[in-house]
Image (cartoon, one colour):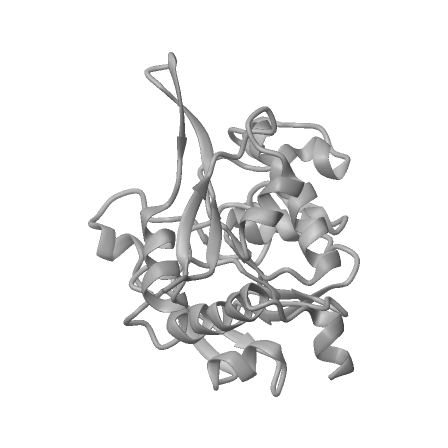
Length: 258
């Protein structure tokens, strides 16, 4: 029995400032395997090691994960400051191109946290370096202390467009989510639709208008206990259905003409 393959985008890190490693999110891999019904394949996000065309031919869809390092602001025409934090230029080089090519082809993508921001930047958008410094915004960052359960606890509502894309996925116009991010959308990219927001107006759910395939992004972390959470589970199930369709050879142009 074969399963569709989902590329789980990894990140680049240095251990003890000496040893370079490529790491991937265990939670994301588990969500893909247990809820989406696909085989997760952790991808080293290094343009010296992977070719986007080969990667797309190898995988049926992609999960763009969260990460500690941020997108370099040069990718959206701004200078780096201390507030922008650490960067991962290798991942920038792989993901932004990969997102654009997947969207054009209709190949399924699900973008989480940093991935959500990558989706916006890939489409020409910009980011705030620190949401909590903006007037009227709450602190969306992960609590610095506490257990994993406390850090990933549900902390605010997200209101999505009634009868919109995410409403249809969740079955509700208001959902409760965790929040573990510092940056956020400043200017939305071309064709990016902000379909859900936090109570302070921070964009939390987006999709690409007119994209032929599954192209959704969320700013929170639905991978945490995805099989149990009533919001996360339908999101990963919907992604899984799209990936299975792609694996079966169902392409958006064929679906539209059917």
